[in-house]
Image (cartoon, rainbow, N blue to C red; front, side, top):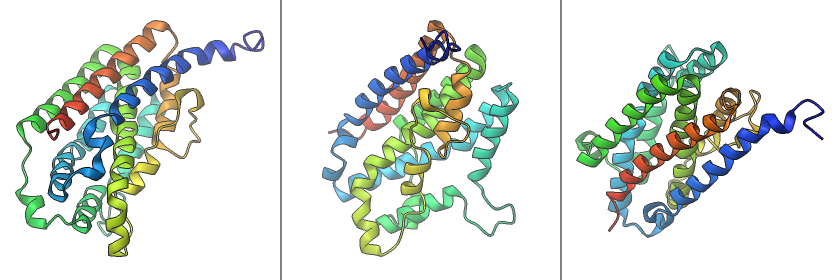
Length: 248
């Protein structure tokens, strides 16, 4: 019925299938012991996770710049530029960057500045970063705009929101005791939040929603959805390897 009215259902079918695949991956993600039992981690153990996770965050601008190089759609390029510039919101230098906000939150949570400066990527973290860049480059080279947008939306927005939402269960009491607000983790949990591709819109208030609106236009066939699912699977496997290093 809707097909005769303009093909709306036919247009949405690839997005709905992609959403179903993604939802299954996220269920697997949140079932990982480190995220599922984050409140049971020791204080030092939790801070170790956050210090290593910071090294993944430091790759954000690199991945998004590579994404811009790989995109051809002007609307998508403009959106990714906009998201990237939000990381460094004040060209005059009067406003902290998101990376500075991350460190500010770490200090509130009990990390010392000496710990921040003295931390180094573990071998696992370094390999995760290397593999992430390889996935980004392969997605851009092999799958064009669809691959780049899948990567940016899932790696840079959706997984981040899910992670930080799980972290927040552990973090919230520390910020309440300190009498201050999170400048990095809690805001990113919200503005990176997952919006299903079938409901994605350029007017969305989340980055994933706006990137999703560009991505949906690239998902026209079963083959497109299969490539989307394969890229997200690789990204999830890589992120799970990061958390495996903290498992008992």
